[in-house]
Image (cartoon, rainbow, N blue to C red; front, side):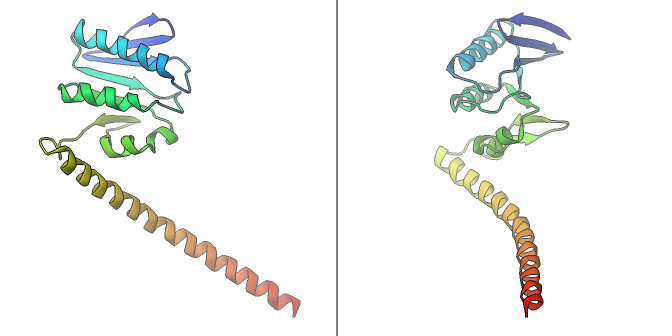
Length: 164
């Protein structure tokens, strides 16, 4: 593995994959996004990498333009991976809709099921998929809420009995 420093950005090369990381940057602003874009563009256009990765282990907030940038490269045929996202990043809508877990904290950008469909068909599909995920999560949450409510009712019932 080869590493090189460029300002506060680290690039690690693992075989045919270039992984970029902003050192200890929790919140990315426009300048950070521009630095990542410039670095990845150089790795793609000048060095010929067809697989890129971004280490998100320290990141708590990502600007909205980040996903659009990644999706543009994905549409050009690049493999796009994200590594070790924190929970709040992994819960972002675009992340949940377009990234598939591979293993050990790595996620790959994937839209194979909808490739070749119109944008409106893609949006409708993603909305259905996303809503079905939320509904299944809500079903799990409902069980917990019912149990908590039931326990609360029992304790309130016993408290009333104790006062009588």
